[in-house]
Image 1: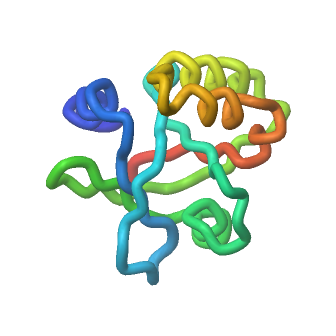
Image 2 (image 1 turned 180 degrees about the vertical axis):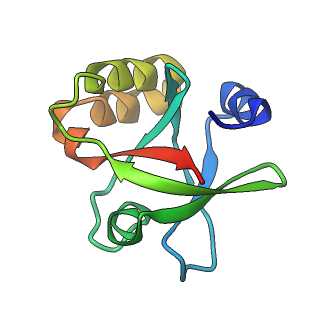
Length: 122
């Protein structure tokens, strides 16, 4: 489990920052959801040079929220994992603002299941 203040931050903010790998210098704002105390993000652009692929390569990175930074492990979730529909539901519930809804519906789709990363505290 992550620190309580990280969950509190996630409940009050739509963006959190992540840095995948060990060589990147800057953080990238992304969407993140919590399901049963576990943290997940999906790669929106499915790029071969993204935070997601850096986590695939190294398994390491960092999450930044407010002034706090936590070192994390990233583990790709299989598309067949039974938690995938719950993650989609969490995206649709959290990102239901008019400006975000179209993107939430997209990232909640099955074609994004292969691009789901779980974050685990080191």
